[in-house]
Image (tube, rainbow, N blue to C red):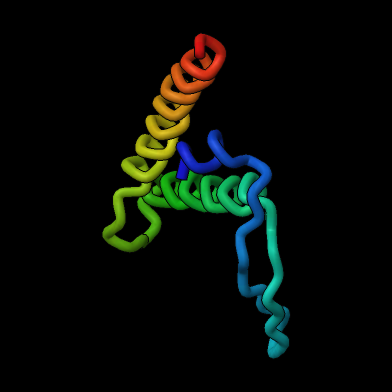
Length: 87
C-alpha cells in the first residue's frame, strides 16, 4: 500500500461508504483512503500497547511494511525516471 500511494497518489479507488442503513458506492482518492487505513493501524497499535484487548494482528508489522513500501517505491521510481531521461 505504501508503494501504491507513492506511485499512484491521484488514482481513485472504488469504495463502499456506509451511512447507517444507506450504502453508496463512490470513488475516493488513493492517498485519502490509504492514509485513513494507515491511521487505523497506528491507533490499533497504540491500543495494543495500552493493554487493551485487540485482535491477533501485528499492527506494527503493517505500519513497518507500509513505510518500507513507500521508501522502496520512491527509490525505484527515481530509477525509472532516470532511465526515461537517458533514452
